[in-house]
Length: 412
Image (tube, rainbow, N blue to C red; front, side, top):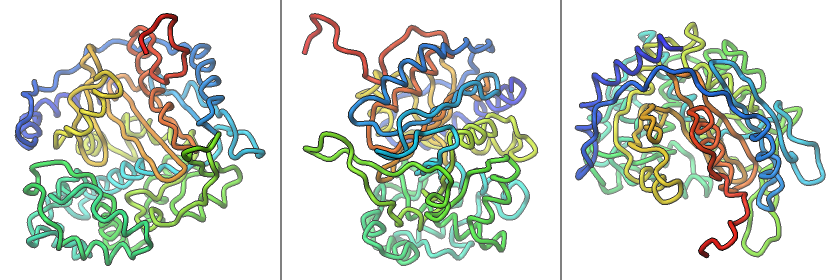
């Protein structure tokens, strides 16, 4: 929606100085956020895309894959490739996958919506919510809900995820975070969290009087007509069509089937959502401002405004994807970037949990983007977001999926 895009980018321009001031030091000087040129997106070449996705799905490290493209607010492409499991049914656009850390965008959307309804304020301290989260030096008395959603709570990234994976109770782990060393003052740096982030679950349940899953369902899934979306392991395995998890192991000729693990379902705000590619596309449309009765423009500005620079993410983009996206920052449950030479501000996130991967990337000004789900630990599908966005921006084709044979005479 152009109206929403201009509103969002104008607001972001006003707060760009704030986000820059909160970046870790030293940080390269960042220019103010500029609105990209308001032009129509270029049509996606679906024949080329389908041919490349078919080839991708046949790579030895792939099992199943689902992709949807949104152009000018409409879902113009939604297809499945490969299989839900070796020897089982094909993936369709209704096959359910785990969304992994795309669940954080669901959690932040729900939280920001409740805040805009006056249930609480994003600048309320974490201590005021009386959750089980404890931070070093009683940091919960200074850190706010906004800091939690932006991963600015000052402890080491992925704090005690291994304890969660070993079966420890998330509430007990959150209490133990007080014993960690501070890696930076609150609000000074980005340190990605799962267990700490899931304090959001406690906050939502206290504010709504419902379980987290029920609150998400009533507030987001049903209004957005996300018919396969759910939280929890039972929601995944009870689906009519669901993708089984696979991981490529050293020495194995193909990915090895895994069991559906419970731990990250126990932190539902951080990693507990399931759904089909169609439902993920519907959720992406809502993030573009196309469901204003569910997520208002004000709520989306709150979510997508960058809060903190993310140098590790920028380094990853430089090492793996030639800095196709720059100025990597984090809002509330969402990452933001500037896309290549276009300067367009794009929004998205990725997710990973054993046997599943997910991603979303879109331009909220053009109402266009892509969502992807797959059931292996292959990195190749990450390139889909760049190949589709390159098409939308009219940029030359590039083998971001890394499925083309090496050029003759190319350096090894």
